[in-house]
Image (cartoon, rainbow, N blue to C red; front, side, top):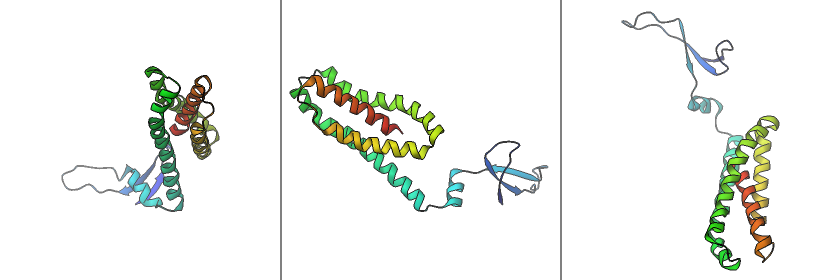
Length: 163
């Protein structure tokens, strides 16, 4: 079996093999093409240092996103008492996170196609770290300043997590 790219039909790699018809199957073409599966490609490429690095960075991004939501769940009741937030204002905090994720996933897909997905992932990871820290820094004890700051940080965190 050999791997080949047939440019006339599609850009997907395929495996060419000579197939002889078995008895009772009728006539079959001299050459059949089977598409490669993800397992075939992973077996061919292997799992090396680069793949390990991608898994590690993906885990770190998921961890940062999970921690930011978990921490928000812990400190939101305190903020509700301190800043006298209504239940609606409390519910808006995770909502803004997910709105940021939806909006930026569309935008980051186009940016990733233009400048490269590795760069977008790296920038997103940096945004997760920076805005994760900034969301935890008390900017002000006053609700008028602190609440919009928290929402802005949650929006950016959601957007960075979506990459």
